[in-house]
Image (cartoon, rainbow, N blue to C red):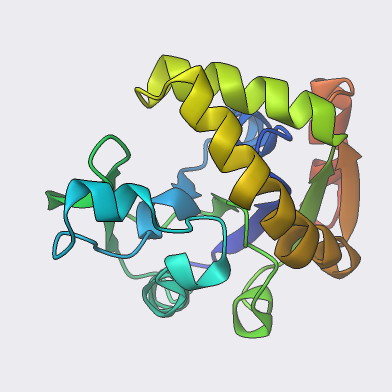
Length: 199
């Protein structure tokens, strides 16, 4: 089986996950979230884990992700780690993922590593202003990740925004396509689909 990999990057709250989900629906494709590949931190206390900078590339097990994508490109199944954001640890189980004609990968650092970029057939950067990204991040982390407004604001100010400026925003130049995170989602999907996906 020939597997076509679509990589989606952009700052936190830009709309990467929503674009990935909509593309997955159109293509009947699985989505791999880079969030699943945060490094295992069970050897640290919960307080120590909470103090880790999760917004720099070193927090991601990029070697394992690269290995998995290389395997699945060859038409072989992989098992994806399951990450628990409330405890900052991987759960003791893995999610099987079978190869498919299209697979969507989304995450902050999808376009950061050159070795990873080489595996993608189409790369997309989702662009959006910082103020909107923060508002979305605040709502999501309170709703889905058990955080307080104060902790979200502190993390955004001290790591999320400065790390995005340092590591994520510069990866925009590596994208085949740049779409708006507050634009018409259907139009963004069509833009991606037109980029070499008519097979």
